[in-house]
Length: 326
View (cartoon, rainbow, N blue to C red):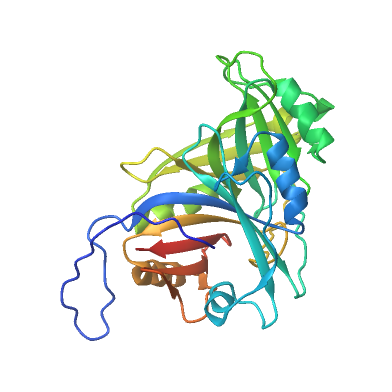
């Protein structure tokens, strides 16, 4: 919920009555963060800290206490009066984005526990210096292995060794040891931006390409993910999304040939992933989402925070996205 902003100047031409402002050039500026809603912030911190992720403010320990949300922040995430909130920002060694972990209390929440193939699930890839050591750490911290056989496997393409686990809230985390990595202590040395499981990867990519200016590349279908993700018989289609001029790639994953059940948790629900996306024109972004069948989550569309505006939407694929405009 705390957006990461980059300074930018926006110039708008005069508009006719009823005309929606359109940004000059692609609306997307950059992917900013991967967001995880959890049941217990302390338990989540213990899991990710064990793997080598530290608090972004360099604090030696998690000290965040639940605080009642003010009206603006309640409107931002659409929660009732009396809701309390706390969060933490985790920095990932060698990565260009942080993880924001959020916890909501004082209201009814409903944990989402999708299977890896269910639309609404997410997958974070953490590169580690020793996958066997990292797996032992993750299991000791409460991780549950979903990879077939319970041990690291070799990627179908390339020599990387990988294993996928569920964290304490059911989020999927792939631990990957790159070929060039020397054996170490199992600590994280990099990451790939969060992937989202969707009904139709090509359709999801087309929306962000056409309305936000992402570059898109679709791959598959392929059975190459099955051993790592524990999905025998599945065919997987992926779409890689990149904001031109940036390096982070956002991946959509679609499973074919297996049973699927879509999940659309609310922002405060444990198991609700989201991504942060900085845009040039938040009003145009919200309008594009709604016109394509998505919806605005934030009351009033967006709220002013500091020198910018922030608003959550549920995109046409059912995914939660925090839009931020400086």
